[in-house]
Length: 123
Image (spheres, one colour):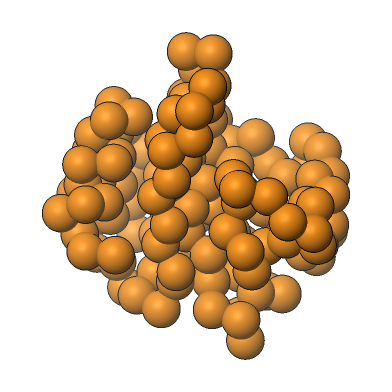
């Protein structure tokens, strides 16, 4: 996905793409999917490539019921998580490569991308 479309999608959520992603470095190989779902709105997904799917998180940003969410999802159990999402075998909401798996979900109140946090200061 081109960065202009991502910038627009993040802006629609009230986030500045360039501030969140001063570099896309560790996200270069990620699959970026922006979906608009009726009754939900825009969902931005960053899914790592298949060889990295077990060790890197899948991240999603969206607004539900007027509240901005950033989910960080792992296939391996992290030290802390908020819920387990049992992705259905198919749906129209989630990226196809994430389906049919159990994900450990962190409801992250820090909207910055996880893989860039070492290089960013919190706003």
